[in-house]
Length: 335
Ligand code: NAD
Ligand code: UDP
Image (cartoon, rainbow, N blue to C red; front, top):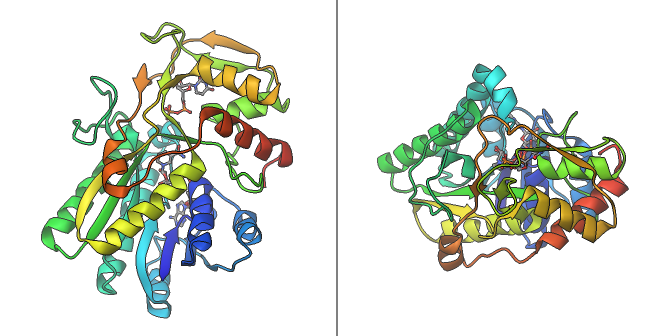
């Protein structure tokens, strides 16, 4: 079965390609390498011993998408391609709206034209805005606090309207919590450009000596130790969640959101301590002012994915730390 993976060279996309190939799917990737490198796809093939088909292209290029759908017998699309940096989205909102929203509109137009109506979409826990309580369920009110979050929210709305107009669509909206870690091989992982925005890549860069200390954003939150609590999920578990969603949408039509998280919250200090224990590396840190827009606690109620998709996260926080560290050590300068 042929699956088109947009943004398949990226962090989550590359891990999902590994799982798809290992499960016998034929994988076609479209990626413009705006935030990734061809090497990640070469390593996906190396890990799996399988070949994938690849188009170096922008999903904004309608003609290329037309060609991809005409040349292949695609049955479903997993749509990762998009920009994801919150700070950048505040500085360049038009770029974010265009890439994420126009890109999705063009993709869906081509899908419909070629009668491919099965879609797994990468959304985010950011669509819950400032949740009133935790754990967060899928029926919680949705809102957004920055342009990046608004692109996810708008795309979710567009997909809902698309389904309302044509009940043949079968769509899974996956709301990821905080993916970290890397493939166990240490060959693929998260490879951020410049100074990492996210916590785990920052920690691994401190551990490897690229940065002198971690800045912990806020020490006075209403949490067990004052630092922010998140639901960290191993990227391989997350990738497997896409296969479960794919199996589900192949069998039914409809549109459903699913939280992909572990259901367990760890604070920044918990993650630092677990990383130190897993790797025997000391992480010097200072507590600084809270980051604008951050919330105290964010973790999932993952029961819907468990009951409907038959998926739940298997790896623990130590696995996440060990695997993130292995990728960093093996690839001190990224790909
Ligand atoms: P990533 O940047 O590593 O991967 C995205 C990939 O899409 C990159 O390879 C990039 O080159 C490609 N891309 C971007 N715009 C494109 C375009 N117009 N045409 C073709 N390719 C394009 O990001 P990721 O962490 O793997 O995230 C994947 C998806 O999951 C994104 O949509 C992101 O918003 C979403 N998400 C990520 C996280 C996270 O913490 N990593 C959390 C929630 C949701
Ligand atoms: N964080 C931090 N220092 C950093 C990066 C992040 O203290 O250099 C904190 C952040 O305030 C939040 C948690 O780590 O409480 C996770 O942040 P990340 O950016 O990884 O994910 P988010 O949940 O914000 O999307």
